[in-house]
Amino acid sequence: MRRSVIPTIAHRLAILCYIAFALFPLFWLLKVSVTPNDLLYSEGVRMWPSRTTWDHYAFVLRHSAFPTFFKNSLIVSASTAITVTICASLSGYALSRFNFRAKYWIVALMLLTQMFPLVMLVAPIFKILSPLHLTNSLTGLVIVYTAFNVPFATFLMQSFFDGIPRDLEEAAIPGSVSGRMIWR
Figure 1 (cartoon, one colour):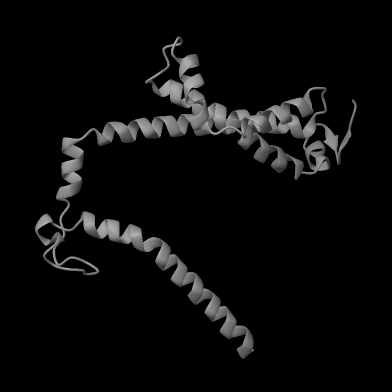
Figure 2 (tube, helix red, strand yellow):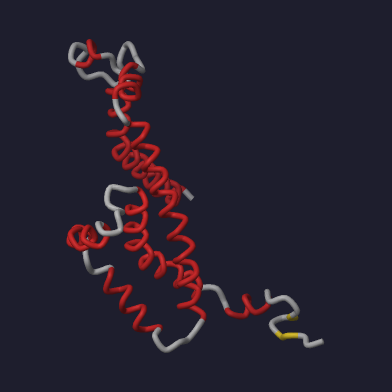
C-alpha cells in the first residue's frame, strides 16, 4: 500500500511543479500590469505589489484601438471556426462513408496543401485577393484562414467518423429495426 502511495504523491507533486513553472510568466505579467508606475522599480522583486491599480488597463482602453482590434479578432476567429467546422464535418463524413473515384486524389491534394507554409504563399494570396478587393478586410482573412484550416480539420473529422461503427449509423435510420429496413 505504501509503495503505491509514494509514487502517486511524487507524480502529483511533479505535475504541480510543472504547472507552477508554466503559469509563472502569466502570473508575473498580471503582477506587473497592476503595479503602479512609481512602484515598478522602487519596490524590488516581490511576489505581489504593496499597492495595485487598474490605471494601465484604463489607459490602454482609452488611448488605443484595442477594443476594435479585439472585436475584429472575435469576428474573424468565430467566423473561421464556424465555417471550418461546417465544411470539415461535411467533407470528413463524405470521405469516411462514401467511396467515389476521386476520393484518393482529394485526400492527396489536401495533404499537399498542408506541406506549404502560409508565409510562402503570402504573395500569391495577395495576387488573388487584390482584384476581388478583399485585401485589408475581415472577409479576406476569414477566407484565407478557412482555406488553410479545412484540410487539417477534414482529416480530424474523417478519423472521427471512421471511429463510429456503420451499424450504429444504420440503426439510427428512421424506419429501421436494428439496421434492417422495414418496408411497408
